Amino acid sequence: MRPRVGHIQFLNCLPLYYGLVKNQQILLDIELIKGTPTELNRKLLARELDISPISSIEYAQNHHDLLLLPDLTVSADGPVNSIYLVSQVPITELDGKRIALTNTSATSVNLLKIIIQQKYNFRCEYFVCPPDLPSMLLEGEAALLIGDHALRAFYQKPPGLYFYDLGVEWKEFTGHKMVYAVWAVRKEFAQEKPHLVQRVYEAFISSMQYSIKHLEEIVKDAARWEIYTPEFLTHYFRGLEFSFDEEHKKGLLSYYECLAKQGIIKPIHQLNFIEVK
Picture 1 (cartoon, helix red, strand yellow):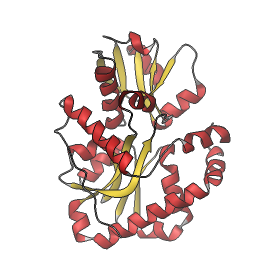
Picture 2: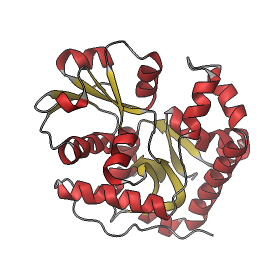
Picture 3: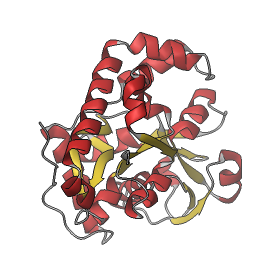
């Protein structure tokens, strides 16, 4: 049985999967299953996936059943350019207001709540809805968009709206990098099929290294099917980080500390990784 591997259908993950597409052999050896972060979270926990990128908060809530893959995240050191609070008023005027939340990522939703409550000391009313900006702003004073929906809204920049990059807000608040997604494997699968986990890990590392060397090629291919200019995409991809070094670990643990302070998760002091060669 081929390992079932999740694939986030957002542009921010394209560099991690682009090399896989170029290496057709590895695609024959895995079953690639696409979905939003929320969908992949559910599938991994329901044992419908063996290895998958998942929202950072999902690992925290299920770390007893999961192991992290080293060297793989979706992160940013400041601007992430695809997670925005889009507001009809300045963020300093949002105290007590209603905010529409996207239904596609729990990590970004809780990151926003940390920023609103711990950075600005505000209390807002939240409601969840599909990521359609006009509909969201009909009912709320502001809206949280992530991924391609956020990227598209920022690129088109409707007049009269304020855009706040949550990566910037987090960096200003904590001084840390922000880890939005991690790659996790079910412990049971890791124990039974360590050689397959190693194979998938090597494939993603190879894909990431290929993409770093061939960014111009990726941008050219992506620009053919998207509304964005190559210059915009180049700037976007260069702002993303995919490694998992000590600074990323500190940032992730800081995020977990903030979540625990709000009672969203129990305190986590250690990240557990699978051993790879």
